Image (cartoon, rainbow, N blue to C red):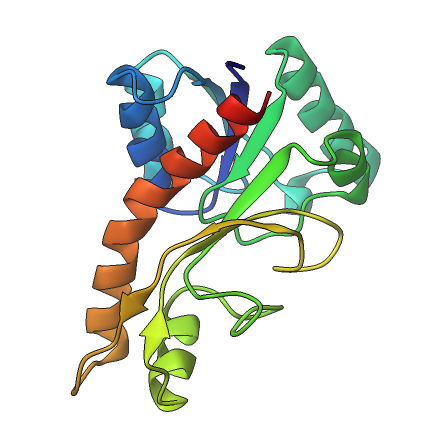
Length: 194
């Protein structure tokens, strides 16, 4: 069984990241989060910092593209990263990183892909679209990352039934609860594949 050195990319509170770290601390997965990268200063950096995990803010707005890429590659190599997880990361990874870590980058999406994916489909916009479409089910998807938004091979999905009177807010809460379990389950699947 493989144990991965994980880098997590976040853009917000990092609740999925926290769930993965906690799964690792409990021994549910053998992989460890070694690095957390955010595209801006966010509250999600606090928890990994408390645990002594290296965190970094790498913003495209604040550096040239070559520097932006170089900083990320150096951080990933420093920690011997062999699995990247996007945990609420709202930016597109540079293609060079996608290619270098091909088959080793996971994303979690709050709907049953291929439905309700693509550019602009994140957060509450996804849940609103699902409710407005009158879907019977939604739920998170963990998939491999390629060069397009929400496009790569699906690793794991869990269905959540919508109830009468479901709102985007109630659906978001239900899906997020499942997200907090499914990401570690997906990592465990990868560990067992190796």
